[in-house]
Image (cartoon, rainbow, N blue to C red; front, top):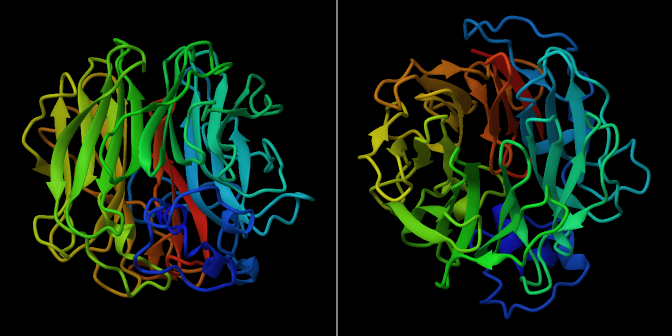
Length: 465
């Protein structure tokens, strides 16, 4: 949720019910310092009444738009956004997290709260919702990963302070460890937007987050303790992480974009690399984007929302792929690109994977890798150029990105919530989406759809290959 962690001086206006300002103020420009409890509140979303008549399907059925895929399904009748998904690499369990407003079944929970659920049959059916750690403060920005022994790792924000926390479950999400704060005694006073990456066995845990600046915290004892986070930048720009991966050789990569404090001017697409288990980090610029397009047509939207974000994945051979959107003309919609590398330093020429027309906005890529040369990509765009023209799309490659499958539209439901229409949905709901590949090689994908940036909206998911 980029703007509200930047909008230091605007937070009280948001709590009062005002819309997000178009140009948020960076904490440094606002004087920094510690935030009040009121300033820590998220903006309120609408009530979930608009979904009262929407059918929640317990069983999947075949998609009408994508052969080999389930039709998309809505998680709940509540106001959900910014979800995460992970699959057990050696069992049929799939796990989801989402950020939920107006939580009716969690007495004493703040709003929003992190909600968890489990599937034991590869995402076909789902158990009831639970809450890993109910708290009176708001929670947001969930991340989830599963180690080779089935241990679940979850990271999210528990307010601005303690900020980013980690929890684990060794019994399929039935119980969770206590929250472990990762900012450390020498870290920043507040933190925002964690991104989680773990080694296959779960011993090494890395969490990138921002406090305006970019930080990474590392644990090498399965998340029991964390070293003080390492600041990875020396500039005065605002950083956001949107992807992370641990390579087979133990090298660690995070994908991050940096912006000016008000999102004006150029943005940079970067990969952070550590070859010493997170002790130090080098930053490698992959591309530069001109100023992003505005999105004033979506209620509550701000300048930076359609700014570049970058996904990253590493395959079994150690090939690294990034997917990102970036523009060559200020204010113009941004195509989606991919690049590959074998070392995180030297990158191939960029290759366009988004569709024309050039007037289409592309946003929020997510990548996953399986085997050698096998990468799967999902993102959102508005190529259908109508009021309900946003959709979620999928493409894959089996040769390190040299060739790609035809784009498949995953958002095939045309009725139900008010934001649905014949061409798609009104707007992406949240700053990111996710993809995981389960033990059977099936893609598990989750994202948000809504009426506008401000909502209402919900979390949607599908599976297929």
